[in-house]
Image (cartoon, rainbow, N blue to C red; front, side, top):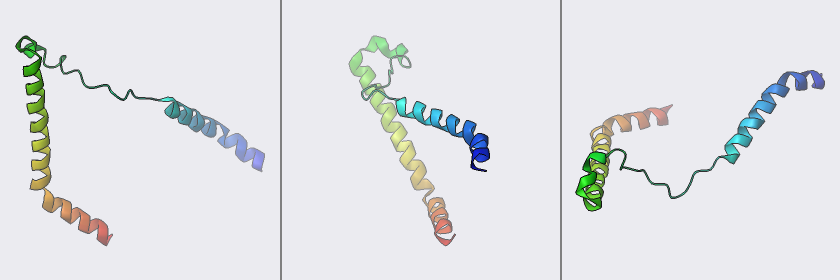
Amino acid sequence: MRNLIDTIFSPVVTFLGSISDSLRSLSVPVARPLDFGKYLGHFAFLGPAWITFITTVCTLGFIYFLIFFVMSNIGLFRKFKDMIKWW
């Protein structure tokens, strides 16, 4: 009976093992920042200081929007938390 189960699940186990090995072999470079030059190429004539300023403003705007979204929906988050706690 054990041999039958092993023959049935052997392809699945080898597939999962190969996925596990592939995931273990993945690596991401630690210091690989985004190249905003590709997206802000129109502002390249302004110089690196202005490009840094523009990327900083865009990043801060995104963070502000994210905080605004969270704070405007805090009631929804609390209702969700209470529902999970009840459940």
